[in-house]
Image (cartoon, rainbow over all chains, first blue to last red; front, side):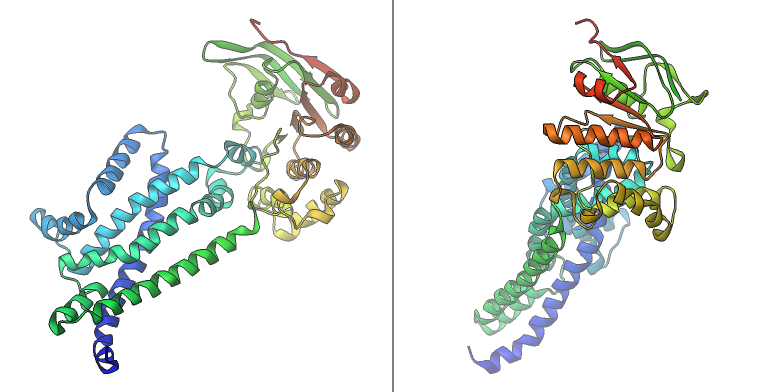
Length: 215
Length: 212
């Protein structure tokens, strides 16, 4: 593993890693709020909403993300919905991850004692105020470990975008490895993934610590 | 003065309250006693607007009053729950300040001016920065009382205020309720403890389980 060779391929690996990071970041930005909304819909009193959302969650968790990516990019154009590669990837990732997040948040909401709602109600708080100031902060605290698992998964799942021709970290390594007939690029890829998940792990731990001021 | 007239409430097939009537005069303490399952808590939940009675009416100072619609800054009924229902994510001070700020729309400064004397009179000054999990049962209860009083309710209701307390604290909360009465606060105390009820109340209302 000569340093010259490593220096030669690092730029292409970094540019692949940048794609990985972009998909990771925008998926979280889209899927977390969408997951919260879906989880509230799953608890709706209006049964058609629950039915539709349960179907959505079933669909997203019941089929491979790889298949969903292919479907969005290659299948949707048949019904005149055409995405470019990158938006197609984000679209599929956000819908997929929002379903997992929704189930996690649903559990978080279910874990809040009903007395919290009543305590707020007798003080005259509206439902929205209650959610914002009392319920959501407690839900967020309780779901951090489970959401953290998905976040770590997302770092690695992002490698699936190769299937629609996007150049992410793993693909950059694959290309170099096939071209130069060496495993060195793949070892570097592994190290970069480890560093990315390490950053996530520390960020999640920091978040848990931030919320540890109460029980 | 709060009047309840012919309140009825059933859950599924089981009748809990049957034509229940009572009067709560201003600045008095009315205690509602009875064994568990007699409908005391259901009655309190109806008064607090947490359950809607099947039939019957409420009058507050002679005016028709619907507890379920008793909302926002004009809310008349305050409640101290059996397990207090403090908000664990907020400090003691924020637990008490939340409603005056969000519901009444007071500024932090205005709310603080109103809340601080209350905090002091309930002996909570030393714990305002703490979180509910750091408090003893008695302290939690006083925070719950302060939180309810900060909204200046016409009537303050307690659900089993002695159940989470040891005997010494039981006497202390009894004294506290009497002190609040001296300050002109009308109170309804639901308890299974007949002795406690007789010690503090101007009027003891006994409820019995139906079809038992």
